[in-house]
Length: 185
Image (cartoon, rainbow, N blue to C red):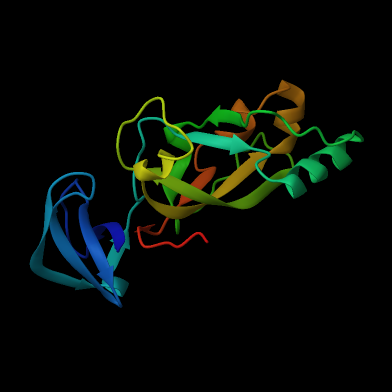
């Protein structure tokens, strides 16, 4: 299924609706994908809706340097040997950085020309869990969307950290929808 958060054309309500994308049509649902829901008879042409940010997570984690090629690239830039960590580098991202996929990234006036971006796979966790094992972790995955990780690299170097460089307003476009039928094999 493709879950979409949207605002219908002419809708002045402050709360977007959830819907299912089927072809070029959005079927409105009652409820949301993380609890009870049901399809309604109300439909919209996909081209006629405003696509909203698919979700605003309470906590938004990112895994840095999450594949070998990226580790090698970072080491090459630093003039060092790649160091594969025993555990992933986990970071938090701020909600103010999130925007819908078709909204504009706004580069702050104080930024330099060292703006970097990279596409990311966003894993949407669908239920609360603790103490997971590798064997049962995927049971908590609801679906996937895509995102763009925008960074201001001179801030990263000056601050010796990632917070400001990755969390400026609009630096994390995401969407357009959450795809639940994904075969990762």
